[in-house]
Image (cartoon, rainbow, N blue to C red; front, side, top):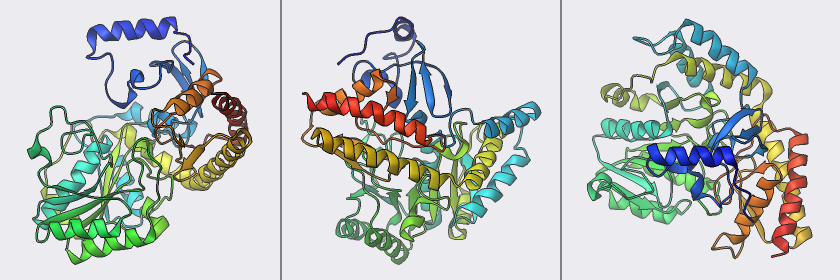
Length: 408
């Protein structure tokens, strides 16, 4: 089903098409979604968003991950406002830089130091650069299908990308120890790093937490090769474990990339590392005029402290389990082949025998029309702002949406 077009959203799209290539770019490009999703939004609060035409949604995409305490969290925004009155982007960093670095080292289990930038691609790229500087080698192992950012070395698109941009990437299959061992052997003598996602969250595919055997093998292989183990925690950071996502399998990386949720929607990214790679991090040149801006750092300090005080990870896990259990019961009732995977606080909802996404599209559009924002193929996100009442209201909607799927 297609939702009716809306005047203000449609007018904004028409204006944008004249001044923005393609009207919009990247993952927030609504035409990449089934027809009926809004492109423009007017406001957000807690776990709810309002589109440009005033329709409100219980939001399970959380701004594509940055909202972990909820939109416009009062404590985070108070910290941001206090710092904004003092200064944001200045000739050098504020005291907030040191405070945040200290807090990251205190919070993240493997971290002896921290550096900051603005988005996830900054952080993953810095990790690779530090690993190469620290080892004097070139090759980076990456999992097939994994997403690590949107510049030539890692973009999912090959438009404008040359073979040379990816000349030193070697691929393995996530959670496949033999595949990883073969990739390490292929790079013998020139391996700088093994790069792993916090968990396998490839677009449109079932999600997989890392197995203990895979995580331990990655750690051991990196150690034997004197290479860095890098965890890309950009998407999952602070949702699975405050100490880092691979704490759930008992393995600690040398370097980790962070962004999305670490400042509850304020633009910030980080690299954390151990002392083995401190010298490499010292010697590389990486910078940006806005990378030490103080407002986002004040926001991050407030975000981390509040997540700790409210046990945000446990709350998100509980709400995610409530949502998963409800969906499972509804799918069984309607005889619909819904497949849920990934951590309960970061699920993906897919359907069996749905290669053309017809079932997923109908499900999500039916939910959207009733005020629940889901995605047919991307990781979803629970936040600390999702409460039992929100989950139960969303489940009332998904029950109707699954009934519509069952009628197909």
